[in-house]
Length: 118
Image (cartoon, rainbow, N blue to C red; front, side, top):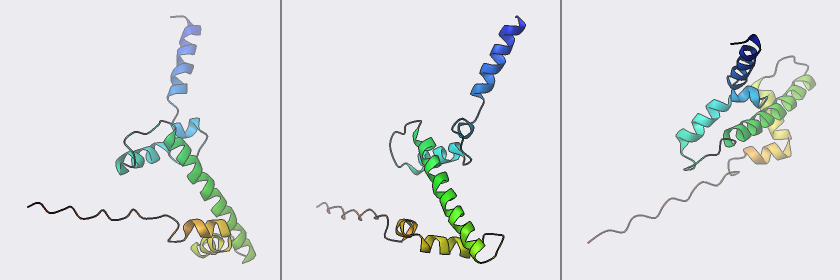
């Protein structure tokens, strides 16, 4: 095998060995989100893009929360973000407050009891 062909094969194999998180330029683990989605049985079928998209959303939300918490820490003349700073950031931001309030997501209604057979 020529050296040129060998280098092409090496490049090709390295491209496929990259993780989905690296390919999507995300820090959060796409494979873990994929596994949790499949184990949770939220749907019968999942697109291959679903965990990548959800991971991107989670990373975006977390970046915004940490940014606001960092600003809260600076206001209080602190260098480190504490859980109190995160909590204050969530309370002070109207959109995040609505997202994380207990009634933000509706719970599925309890199924009616099965009819008794005679």
